[in-house]
Image (tube, rainbow, N blue to C red):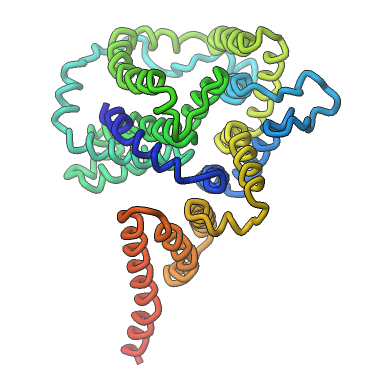
Amino acid sequence: MLSGLALIVLAPYLGRIGLEIGPWGYFAMVVFALTITASLSEGMLLKGLIAAAAGLLVASVGEEEMNGVTRLTFGNNSIDAGFDFLPIMIGVFAFSQLLSDMPDAVTARHTLAGNLPKETQRIQHLWALRELLARWVTVVRSTAIGLIVGVIPATGASISNIVAYDQAKRNSKEADQFGSGAYDGIIAPEAANNATQGGALLMLMALGIPGDAVAAVLLAALVIHNVIPGPSFITDEPSLAYGIFVAFILAHLLMVVFQMLSLKLFLRVVRLPIYVMAASVLFYCALGAYTVNNSMYDVWVMIAFGGLGFLMTRFGYPIAPFVLGVVLGGIAEVNLIRALSVSSDYMQFFTRPWSLLFIGLTLMSMLLAIIARHRVSPRAFVFLQLPILLMICAALAQMPGVVRPILAAVILALSLWKTYQALFEKDQATAKIH
């Protein structure tokens, strides 16, 4: 709910900022989104980048949008229009998960419930609501964390859950009970998980960049109906935009009611054998893929990309960078062509403030990912990040208004102070020892 209110308040403002970005900035933003997705893929930077590149390759199949040049079709007219988003999404998320859940015939006969006892306790909804209201500070703090993390492209709930849980544990008087069912340890990640969707949707509606895989699916659905989210989306499509706002808030309320009424039914469903559930899910997957163009071709696309998603998961390649590469590939290509049509000078990407800012953030995300896997001293890290921070400060200082130049001055002052500490404090400590 709180993230929904933030979505309504901040989306128009962020949309106005989006008008400043230009094609150079949008291309750099897509590069940043793909890079940070890869860098946050559980420490697998190289595999994440490979997955993102594979997604961009899939997005480039078919006719190029600006000039109509056909690419990578190998004479097959069926893919002149490229691959639709929806069959790919269904394949890599749903169909590949079915393959992972049933690696052999023995596993397929098991149930998802495992050793869950058949007798279920009475669910006390009013008691749970009272406990939630009593811990409103944890709820508000975790919601803010989820919203902030959701705005960062492709981070998703997996990151916000960890951050919210860690902060709840740090601020709890019962930190020793975390990991054994502490209420704050349950409320914090769940509140952050729900709020993350608001941040992801904020980025999608204001800038056209999906914050996570769920927002990427929504973007694909909008594109199918020839609706392109971006800075002017709220102005051009106010009824649709505010309809999404209202639906987002109502969805949370209806989901609570729906779960209260059907939770016991869900417990019974997970006791079915996996192969029974898989057959039902596969039917609806094929039906959804078929209805895109009323063509069996899309069903085969779903199966092919489902197999690809299964192999990527089996060999440790993350799915999220691949999906974002597919969704954002067209946006990156169109804006790159527009930028080069205005000027063939590649230095424009380093002289335009928003483009320079996203290039700096891209380099920072890669630096943090590399440092996370290699032991680097704090002093070395300060010197490595200094030129990148100076680049970010230079970008913010060129932007209009007062807030962003002030932010650049604050970042610059902190960077210089950290550099001063790294340079002189260690030398002073060494001199005292001698």
